[in-house]
Length: 135
Image (cartoon, rainbow, N blue to C red; front, side, top):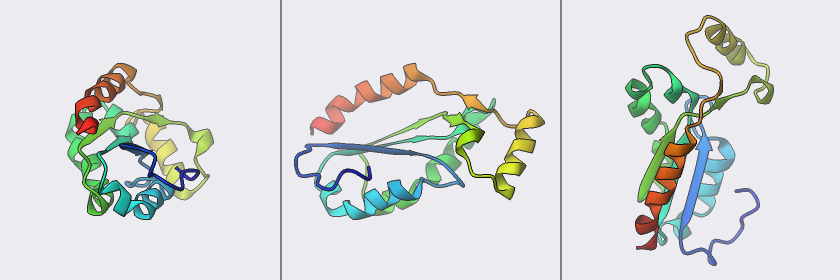
């Protein structure tokens, strides 16, 4: 996202982000803000990956995760939104009080870790985008 400066050569755009701290990553939000007017003129889809969706009752949290991308929807309206379980890799997270609390919750078995992506579900969603992005 940080390398894309001009969207004029694209007929459609798919953008996504993992959730960290109940929101999209700052660089993903910055991309949406920087290209908001161009994205409003093109078919645009989003995907969000969040380890919360890998919890045994992940469907219960789906509405909350969907709400966390409200700042994206406030900028531009997606034609499709994909929500997928993600990856919890502590080696890629900063060492903060919040990540220490998260480690404790994982150690207690309350929260999942590791790679929980469902590649079949991701592929199914991606293939369904054809007609949405062609219009």
